Image (cartoon, rainbow, N blue to C red; front, side, top):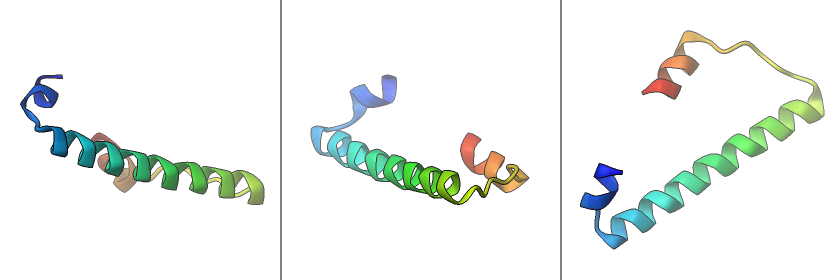
Length: 52
C-alpha cells in the first residue's frame, strides 16, 4: 500500500492494466492445460519468477 500512495493516477492505471493482462494470460494457460489434460510441475525458474 505504501507504494500505491506514491504512485500517480496514471501509474496506478498502467499497473492495473498490466496486472489484468498478466492474469488473463495465466487464466488462458490454465484453461488450456485443463482442456488438454497437460499439467507440469513447477520448475525453479517458475518459482523464482513467482516470488520475484
